[in-house]
Amino acid sequence: MGYKDLREFLERVDSFGELRRVEGADWDLEIGAITEVAASSPGCPLLLFDKVRGYRPGYRIVTNLLHTERRLALALGESPDLRGVGLIKKWKEGPAKVTEGPPPVEVNHGPLRENILSGKNVNVMEFPAVKWHELDGGRYFAGPVTIARDPDEGWVNLGIFRLQVHDKSTLSLYIGPGSKHTKQILQKYWDRGESCPVAISMGHTPALFIAAALFSPWGLSEYELAGQLNGMPIKVVPGELTGLPVPASAEVVLEGEVPSLEVESHAEGPFGEATGYYVSGLSTKEPVIKVKSIMHRNNPIIQGAPPMRPLPGLWHFPVNHRCATVWSDLEKCGIPDIQGVWQEGYGLMVISLKQRYAGHAKQAGQIAAGSRGSTLVRFIVTVDQDIDPCNVTEVMWAMATRCDPERDIEIIKEVASSSIDPLLSPEQRERADIITGKVIINACTPIYRNRAFPPVVAVSAELKAEIIKKWWNVIK
Ligand SMILES: Cc1cc2nc3c(=O)[nH]c(=O)nc-3n(C[C@H](O)[C@H](O)[C@H](O)COP(=O)(O)O)c2cc1C
Image 1 (cartoon, rainbow, N blue to C red):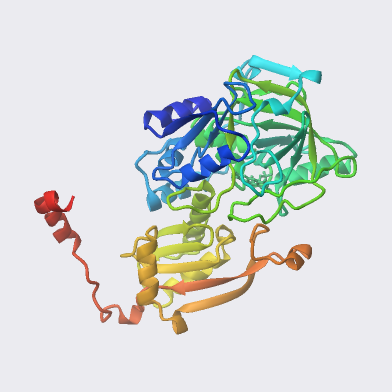
Image 2 (image 1 turned 90 degrees about the horizontal axis):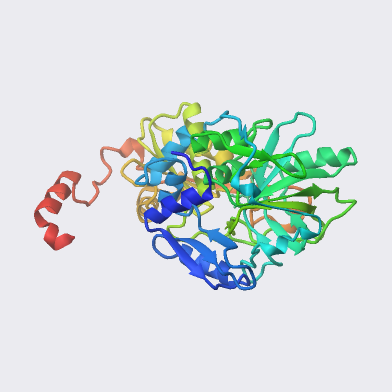
């Protein structure tokens, strides 16, 4: 099942009782703090803020949109009961595999066109931008989608980049180092001495948000990817200023251009990163978007997706993608009997498998270490199939009882890392030496001792089922 817009998805979430409405919160730290505290509470409610201090009633912000397994499954049209490894498996067969999808369909009208502003009427400050955390350098739109067209090949790219608000018509755009397509497209325009036309969508069907964040091959428009994930093509209208295709039922679309850094730039940040640290955003010279046109729905809803350190139960969908990528790579390399791949927080990945031969677990660990999906992982742990990889207590027990540190821990030096790795020193960053060490921990029972390894003290599945049936009134 797909969603025609963000509102339809919110209605669906509301039907599960996971949506909470908040009125009167302050854009200055309060909305950010409420978002984070709610994210650490059981069930992590989705929050819809209205009557934000200093902004018109009806100009709303939604946060914690996809931060539970249920909401992520709902966004992808999967069963809301999918959890843990089951969800990763679906992701492996779905989003991680998509290489094409239905192109967007151009329509003449859409709710986005309910309000069209240009010239003196352009004022991005009418839309609630938030100071999310105390150390942030200012107010941000966190999580909008930037849309740009490759000037040579004509395809349209989407990516998610934070935007800092500076004045009525100036935003700065932070694109981290690495092979981001948006950066390459900007550079193409700048090399021709031109500014790059861009459109920014700030509230849309969740499939578009997911697609824009995924790494997709050069030349594949994330609109197609989003259409595939959404189960129907994305409807677009041409932007008033740029003619770029923009979602017809988006909440707000800003249009403008990005001049080269020589023409104009702005100090940006600091702003946190997904790893839970202020790694980037101390720069004095980032590109700016000069906003010249705005389209928006009546009573628009802006999506806010601020960074947060990992919290128990908090779901970050990029983690699904990483696990699914590693799992697919293991399969492509012919590693048999992988039961599941899981990532805890940002640095620990767990692979569960049924050991078949000597060296099987280590092989899996080594291949995972070389996979693009484990770029932000420092520790890779392999466990037997009786251990639930999503259960940290079980994983730690396996590490403490089945791993002989002398034999089962291996350190791999100088593996490719990510620019948001907080361990990188300033000097490493300076010389783009983006590498880290990784640890592979084999916490599987030694295979040659499989039969002789001490049995586990636990009630068998059969006995457990019997006991639950008979003694439910005691143990419930
Ligand atoms: C909520 C969220 C915020 C993000 N913010 C940024 C950001 O500010 N800068 C950045 O370089 N990447 C950011 N990313 C990652 C990019 O969106 C991602 O790398 C994407 O694939 C880039 O698209 P592109 O290569 O098509 O330009 C963010 C991802 C998410 C999910």
